[in-house]
Image (tube, rainbow over all chains, first blue to last red; front, side):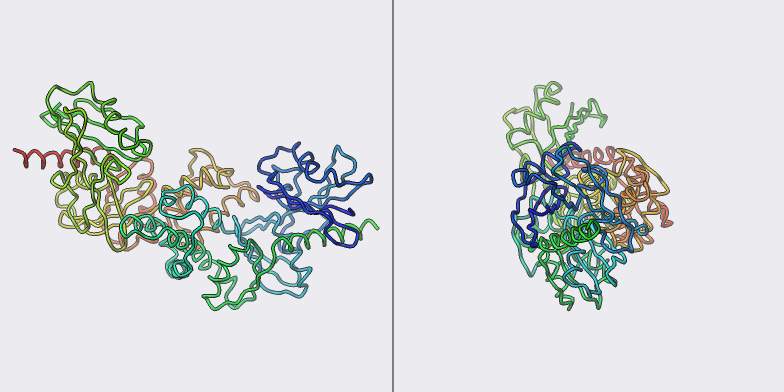
Length: 299
Length: 299
């Protein structure tokens, strides 16, 4: 192994042992996310996953994601947009007990006005730009906290975060609506219909949400349709707010397959073709770009 | 005790032992809400609270609230709006093991289009109308599921439910925003400002929510201001949706004091004076009106 690439989020840890030729020698993951670790837990969690694969020399480790937050392994201060996706030259070095590791945590990106932050997505954007260096347009990264990012001339120009994914999880699993929806059901027509409803009257959200419960009690609304409609209402409301981002733009989606399909369907219904990418590949390409910069600097 | 008034919600049980002259002889409450009981648990929960106060004869018990839902003590089918707040003549009788009880559960109210339901609020409205028989206007009942109700000629003409209260609880206690807000803090200026923001751009909700977190990380937003702003965003969005309900109307608020103050402030900032009432008194007056109807029917 020449170096180690690490994507360390709130709820997951993903590592790749990289060969000198840029190939992946080993890929491992665990649920040892930043959310469940205190500061002293990061090094052991990493060694538990990849310690056996380490050689005797020093191996560079490039980390992106929430491990760099104030509650993480070590705070990697934010770069400020507009900026290029941060690379290894602004990474935070972490002292480890095991001298075989040389850890570099990549910074996230913040924006002053409107205040916003990202950690991890900037590395996926770096990967996307490494593969599409001339891209000019908008990258949307659907997830717990969906990001919409304006990209121009290789820079993150501005971005905006929406709590759509977290609201879907809270409402479908922890609110009164949980009684009216199926675990993983779907109904494409109900979804598309709800996207349109929310886009035309976004202020009606809190009433439309309760309607899912009431429609179930009064008219036996199908639980699959209810779940798809909840998703459609939330994504539709997001699309109403992000119209200036996507209207007439070139949009690329980076994220989980199922979720990206929902966004692609919703944007497609607005007449917007979108490009879908492989999220894990974008992360790895971003970490590779950061490592290349580190190598160049130290050679 | 001449009869017993019972308000049985999802998370609370409140009973009043009523004297022949209409006075409250005893008032007790517990957290034995409908949410934590199965069907066989209701009678023991009621007896645990008021059994010692029962005489040897049969005592009528009038119940409103979620005890009448499908998952409750016995299903009390909905009346359909437009209708008067349902009274004892459409109540559901429940057979009890203890023959000293004669239990009547009041129905809730449903609406076909848009589908909506209420259980408990119709009794508060009945109480409000008993005290204000000529009222024509809008009653707003802030709570976990806030109701806006058009009242005319003593009838519930139409209504709409908003999940505003439940969303506030989920977001402030269970989402990423919980890291950025104080337990019970408040900031009247931040609240009013957020109401205005949400009313003018309601579609921006999911982004404005994440901004509370980002403002805290990037600009050290005060946790009291964050909590008040969250409330303001949610209530402001509700006011944007309910404009046809309140604009130029006579609005009465029934609900928890702190919450009603927030709604009164938000509506006041729109130039709308509102009437505030004592929620518990409305419930009891509604149950009294139902008992009067029962007595009349059986005498």
